[in-house]
Length: 137
Image (cartoon, rainbow, N blue to C red; front, side, top):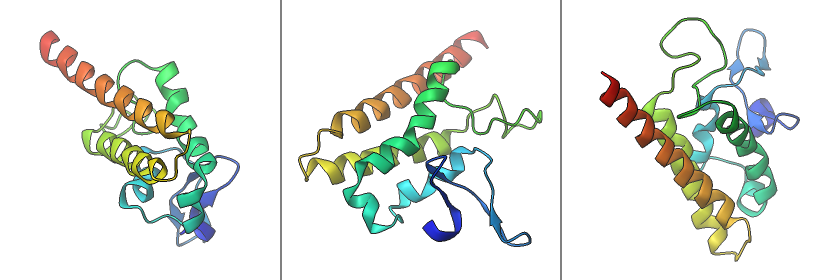
């Protein structure tokens, strides 16, 4: 997975295009599934820096947009693209962060607070967004 889809410069995974035999550089919350499924290379288990770098894109999105992070940054007008956010992908982000919080807490890492605080922030933003949408409609 890492060899074919990991982009070191972006600090994230990309979709793999079988036709062009290359990984895409398009941002999508779906690229965080390996964190949720814990199907990451072993060096991720001991290298919180890689995890923090990957989730720094989420932190950037949260600083730019209110509510939950958008599923993609493509403004296609489709329901799965910007500015919309999908609950299952929010769960993937949150659970991926909690997986690493659990993993690094056992190692006594100082980065645990980063993972748990971002998971809490994502959770609260999602609940706030749902409440605001419900209240306004």
